[in-house]
Image (cartoon, rainbow, N blue to C red):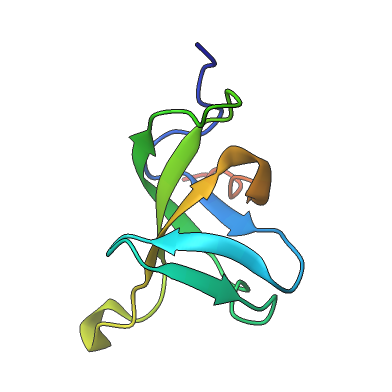
Length: 91
């Protein structure tokens, strides 16, 4: 069993080329262009690994929550890039 690299609430970007297939949380298969994959996503759930041993995640876009613009997808770990942590706040 492979350990998940990311944790819930981690912020990531999705990498991939045009035509990458991702599953929406509703179970639909979306053909996503690289333009639609742009933006910041939050890890919302750790999922079981694929048959090849690659961990999967449910991710949620960090869009405008007030307007319901959050999209959720299930993606393999190989399609994710970690965002750097913000610098600590000194008081």
